Length: 326
Image 1 (tube, rainbow, N blue to C red):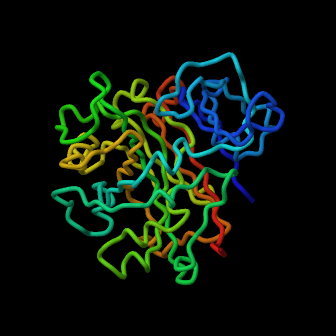
Image 2: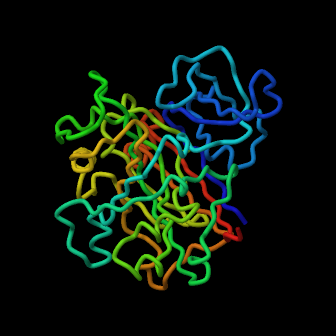
Image 3: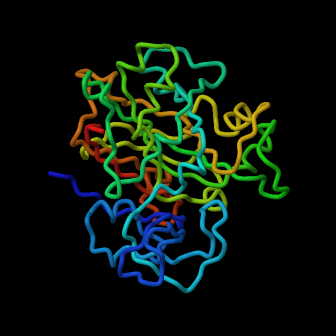
C-alpha cells in the first residue's frame, strides 16, 4: 500500500506544467509557467495523492520559463502534467557534488574532501516528477540489483541579481548573487556500475538518473538555504534526515569553485550532495527497485522542530520507479 503523505504548507514557488484539456485557452502541448493558486499547496504531494485535477490550479505567468517568468496574469490553468521546473535544453550539463555531507563521509568512513568532488549528468538524465513520468532504472542497475537513492538540494543559477553578469570566475562572497532558486532532486545511483570505475559520469548519467522539482522557490524567499532540512523517504520509511548546514563545502564555495574559468549559464543546476542514510551502506543493504517510491522533502528546520507553517518550505519531489525496457 502506498503511504499517505501528510499535509505540508510550502512557500510560494514556480512550477512548469501542461494544462488539462479542460483549460481550452491554452495550447495543450506548450508548457506553461505559473504559481499555485493556493500558494501554500504542496503541488508534488497533491498530484501524487491522486486529487481531482481541479484541486491543483495554477495562475499562469506571462513568461515561458521559470528563469524569466514575466508577470502573473488573470488566467488560471488546471494541472494536467507536472513537469520538471526546467527543460533539458535549459539545464544543459548538470553539475553534481559527491561526498559533501559530514554525516555521509562518516558513514562511508572517508575523510572529508579538501576540494569539491565533481561529476556530471547529461541533460538526458532529467526526469519529470511522478505521476507525469515513471522514473526508469537502467538495465545495468536492475540486472545487478544495485539501485540506490540520494535525496539532494538542487541550486539553480541565473545571472547576477544586479548587474546581469554571467556566472564565471566569481568569488565565494558574491556567489549567492547568482542563485535564482532552489528545488529538490534525486541523484539516482547504480552502485555496481559506479564502484567499477573511478569516473561516475556513466553510472550516474543513465536516463531517469535525475528527477528534479517540482517547485522552484526563489532565493528572494529562501535567504539562507542552510536552514533547510533535507529528508528522503523510501516507500514511506524515513531513510535520510539532515540539515543543509552539514555540507562540507557550502553553496557559495561550490558556485565559486565550479565557475573558475567556466561559464555557468542561467539554468545551470548544481546537485549539492546527499547526506547519510543511503541504501548501499546500510546493514542489511537497502536497494531501490522497480515498483518503489522515493520522496525527497525539503522543509525549514523551524518547521521540522516547531511546526511553524510560515517558514520557507520547498515541498516534495515524488518518484516511482520502473525497469528500463527501451
